[in-house]
Each structure stands twice: as C-alpha cells, then as structure tokens.
Image (cartoon, rainbow, N blue to C red; front, side, top):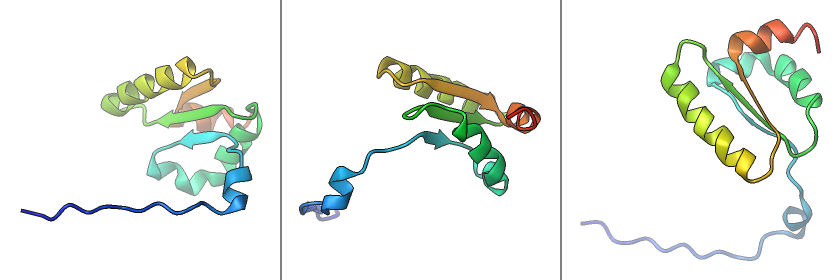
Length: 94
C-alpha cells in the first residue's frame, strides 16, 4: 500500500499571474516536424482559439477530439478541427 502524497502549492510568480494564454493547439506528435506549417495555421486564428489536429486513419483519436472540441465550444472558444492531411494541403493557402 502506497503512502498518500500531499502537494503544497506556493504563490505563483507575478509574471505567471499576468500571463494570458494565446491559442491552444492539440496535435499528434507526428505533426511536430511541421512546426512552421502549424504556426501558419495558428497565426490565422483569433486570439484564444483552439486548434485540434488528428490523424485521418485514427478514428478513436478523431472521436476523442470531437468531444474535446465540443467542450471548448461550450466554454466559448472558437475551434478549428482538421486532419493532418487537411493541414498539409491547406498550408499552401495560408
């Protein structure tokens, strides 16, 4: 049986308290080599928007991100949900 661990939170730094998040991007790890392409897409979104990207062939991942999309929309965020192929094909248009 493991001992319970208790965490003690301290005051966050002032810079962290003043920080406002920009856009949120949730992408598969295999998209990380395409950081410039992702940045192009993210730069077209309004501040506070959420970008979700999924592998076309991974239906489980797509369904999960659809639920995540729904949650963010309920919280008032603008959400863009694209497959990796759509990101790659549309990056030429951005």
